[in-house]
Length: 492
Ligand code: NAP
Ligand code: MG
Image (cartoon, rainbow, N blue to C red; front, side):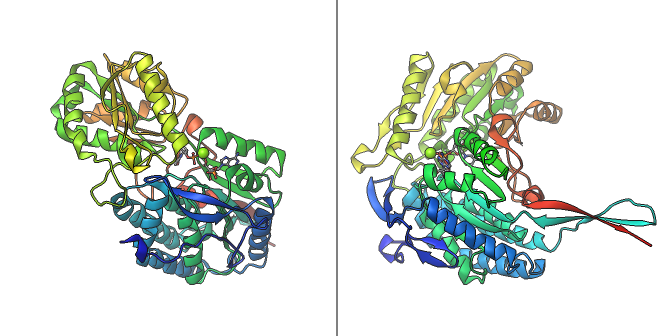
């Protein structure tokens, strides 16, 4: 789609069913990271705007305009929203591509269909999940019922702007909560447009509020608000930690955190009996999808020394399939880094990798500088060790670090030797080995002979410092947006 064909961008906050400027009147610029050009100015929500949105969400929750609807009615509204997201998929895909630099084909083929599926799946779950009856004697009836938590704040990142918002919004609304969503200041446009579509779908006013604004002010205000019952967050481990402080220092709101990762891809000796071209393609996908700006990015390739050389050769052969370029071009597979400071951070890690003695096999430099965008060539390091900075810290860029090992025990030890625990892959021909290794890995999701985050119906989240307090997706997500209540009846 030509950009000129897009409607005017919605750039205000959406509070209590209408668009409104920030109370301060201030705005901030949002940039196209592929060109460095300013796309739009967005309302800079702050403490007052968050408070206004929380009050609207509280009123909407307390009068039951959404929470007291029957689950089947909520389902119908959410299914209409899914239809509207589908009908406007091209526009939403383009917004995320423009603002986040995400390849348009990824958005068309991945983020948008997954967004629609997520809304539909949670909508359908709304009237299909039952509560429980306790095992009492004949003189009592014990009910365990789920109720919505109340006002839910969601603070989401820029790497999958629409999809991460929907991973929170779909289950929270299906469970009957009301919400205030704070997108990343780098990518506000698709979430704002989503709020408008939700209103069009018939979601009552005040149920879904979107307040754009900087994390340090608007995000913090949501985290510290005394009338927010729960915060769900996706982003860095560092900021996630802050949300626990905010909760402790305010009203002990519930907190769910989906954080960073340093996910291993284990290639065992008998992987040589698999099709190594297929393995190489999947390893590259895990490492370079979304420019490596992916919390479950398979950034550590932990490979048996006996297949290391053959596999690295195949990786290099397949690398040209990863075309770096304008995210709006359909054949582009790697867009720019989200912003200049992030580009500098990624380049800093590459320098550090070289300085600490890892070998750059391919890449390692900025490209397409003339575009004004923040592009990095996909980079493969070989002969690294797990103690190097590039093997320990989340780079969040297209950088794959190869670490050889000599035994299966070694491989598991190296894979688990990290403060993170989000995802992992294991490549092996042998099913027993696959299960043994999958069970030994301290992570939330393991792909066997693939790179996978499961599906909308399987829980997603991390062990260790990759997460806290719950999971996105699956019935686990629905569950975490509810409180459990026991109702005990004495029978006469
Ligand atoms: P981030 O800096 O932690 O930001 C995430 C969100 O928090 C943004 O909306 C941000 O707003 C806000 N924020 C920033 N500082 C804040 C503060 N002091 N108080 C309250 N809110 C604050 O992370 P990011 O750089 O956007 O995203 C990259 C990170 O997300 C990576 O570490 C990645 O691993 C992680 N991630 C995890 C998952 C998962 O499911 N586990 C999924 C995707 C990404 P501003 O942008 O406006 O500052
Ligand atoms: Mg940030």
